[in-house]
Length: 272
Image (tube, rainbow, N blue to C red; front, side, top):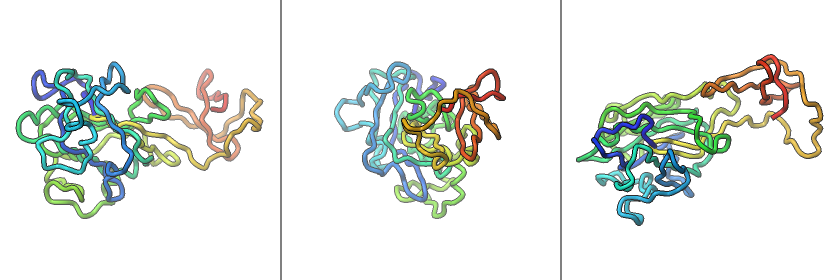
């Protein structure tokens, strides 16, 4: 989670202070998985250096954002003395998950005073395996523009969910009438890609760590594999564009491969 447009609803207050984040997949909250890691960072300076939380220690550290408690005014809080618009909260080491199986993200904002500090935040999904510097957004919420207690960011698979809760809940997805709701923007169309886009990391207010995989499409390449030709003939060429970068792929025989582009999309060379 971060402030991609550098704005806040409280003049001069750019810290992150929230109660809970839920990531619902198949009717369960993924953030109740074990082994998660999280940290406050300066997004513009170092996305690996932990800045610590309010008051130091563990009282308001980042893990409190998914501690399954929503009854407090806030549970996680970044330091106020390093509050710049570049402060972000990253959650990583999530179980690998396909984006198209996400039903919704539910964000419980801090309550009472200063809950408008959530204005300006957005949640983004990244692929930390293919994109370790987290520069290519694969899915994103809109920037928050209204201060409310609960936000619900729906993915297409929300249509498979039943049993919505009336009011705030730790066991069910809050109903649309009790939260500010929107549909998340996914870059490209995951359902058109074999195995789709998969998530294993969250950045807050950016969600991070997403993997694009083509599983079961080709044998493992080893040192014994013959790849001596430096150019190949590709049939059924395809491409998609991500952040103004062309990503070409095509069929070589009966298997699907990524290729580099030489000259134009008609010449795809070098097996990746």
